[in-house]
Image (cartoon, rainbow, N blue to C red):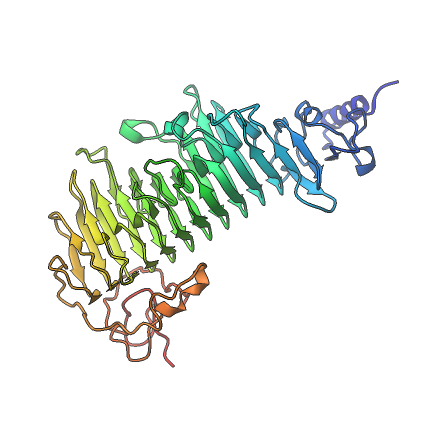
Length: 509
């Protein structure tokens, strides 16, 4: 007698041949009560093992549901691809904790797709810890290789933790060892991912990176650029990451928003940042919080790195990062092939960041830094500097407007000559070192903040940086075209007789 699976496959083939779409199926997997000999299409007839799932090629619209409270060892790698409007979905069923995929170091990744598209993977707990020690590995790896454009891969609600990847060995000097990695390899056919979402995931205890995209089709040093498109990394929480928290590499118009990254660069001893971009055009980093990034290598909350154009960093909260608020940089070498152009840093709040609040190095051109509020508390400014403009092919045409520098520390400003750059309409309050920049319309009076230094953990804890009635910052700033139309809190800009200074636009009594 033919098995149910054989009959189902035959019926599906007949429907396809006859022009009638096959009906998507839902498969259940139960690590305790399931049996692989069953049909798998009901909770009562669930499969048991990952091996059964991995040996199955799923069809568009199928669902793979893992029982809540269950755990599996080894790698999860189901086969097949969905189609537009009919993604293949992995999720959980039943009551209890998220289903666990414990890779145990048996493969590079615990959850894997290769040259597959239209997948949505939700609500799993993923680990990949090898007791034998660190090695190149990831928790979740979505791989494309010589496959053209791969579309629609969504990861939502995952908890990825205890991935002991090597801190220096592996792709991109070990940075591709990650909790969640989107990766492109190969050299025969230009390959990229389109429509990628990483949302609502909790990534912690991972080395070396938290969430990362990478491709062999980069443009560094004259390479061919085949960027990720439609990339959104949003509403994720990262903590205790060995190196970089979130890094979007080789992407066109990625959006990185509403993420929280804490205690990044915890173990690598190398240059890492909480949230940053590399080889991107028109990236947006907004509504993120970064704090307690370790070391001054690089150690910042945010970074606009090399081979980037028109990056926008806005409405973020950076605090207590040992390396500072933000790095804007490029390679130190001269040459047209190296660039960081058109970066905009606006309406952000930095509280008690260390080392250097702004670090600018290499060939950085046409950048605008405006309407940020920077607070350095007493005793927090040693050895911090507000600006550290470094060596290499020098920056040029950088404008600093409407910022508030509330400096109760002893830090100053370290500049090399910058061609065609300007400070204007800024507030310099507190410590006034000899290195303080010239500014034709500067204010040195108390800016009239409600309760500076009172920010806690959370984007909504910074109301102390709003302007009080009577603040000299109200309506005294420079009006900047195309400034986003809102302040950190969502108030319209401008409001009243003109634009205010700092991250808050005063709305009146």
